[in-house]
Length: 124
Image (cartoon, rainbow, N blue to C red; front, top):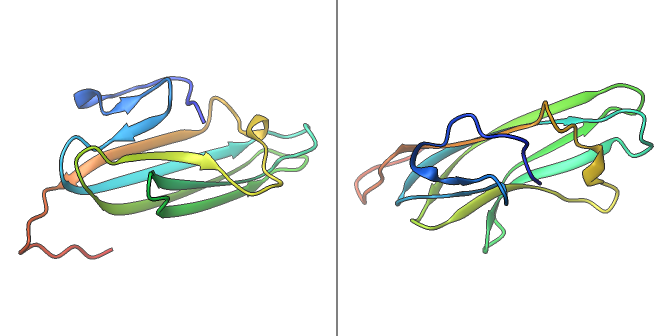
């Protein structure tokens, strides 16, 4: 799911062409997505998820259904990642449709919260 533009990309960890965030190093990361569904196309019900590519671990799930109105949904997740792990937002569900996602009001954010070693405990 491509996002139209990149506002901040410190460390060049987000690939705008693929909409994939790549963890630059081991640590705890925060991800947030807001997805707005279009209205008036006939298939405005959309289910998306923030997922780790490769192992398919779902970090968060979102649903929006606008029907005759625009609708938005958001969710946030904290995840422990290894360097090189990739995270993105994808559409899932057989009744979801990529064209029902509003291009300009949908966002995806990811950033490193902190380093993790064997003595740290993360709650979340």
